[in-house]
Image (cartoon, rainbow, N blue to C red):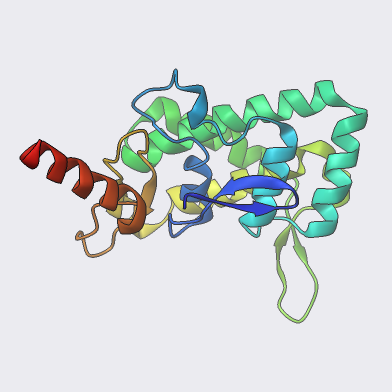
Amino acid sequence: MHWIELEGRHVPVRIGGHPGLDFCNTWAGWDDRTNPRGEWLRTYDDFAVWTLHAELVSTSDVRRLRRSAARDPGRATRVLSEARTLRTAAHTVALDPSNRGAMAVVTRYVRRSASAVRVTPGRRPAWGFGADSGLDLPLLATAWAVGDLVTREDLGRVSACPGHECGWLFLDPRGRRKWCSMASCGNRAKVASFARRHG
């Protein structure tokens, strides 16, 4: 199964090994951008809930954001559009870190995120964003994660699943993994191969 249900929304399973890669995986079928079934972030609510799933924001934040988005749908739509722009650039950089245009887009969002991030107190202090971020909170938190992704030493070990209508990204440190999931894309490929041989 490629998804789970969370807060009443379907979100893609996390297989990337990093939230920045899982963000890229909110689109399936990167080779065919015209397929509407590939989009997991259809609404702002989907994006907000996905950031909860990726452990970038809290449950209380998501519930507050969804109420705010219902009151300001125009702003919510603009944030969602920006998230998709960031996602496309992050996907490009994950597979080609030398792409200057895509890296410039990622850098722009990371800078915006850096201007709002702070260390939250607690037993284990962590980077975070306050409620004053408004509807931008999921975008800022995601941009921060993408910034971490594109500066990792193992960025060159990212692979893309060759499955039909997939293309999901994942860290492949040993260089031996082919599929996002053997149980889904890998199994479908085996079935298709068997059918071709015996058809």
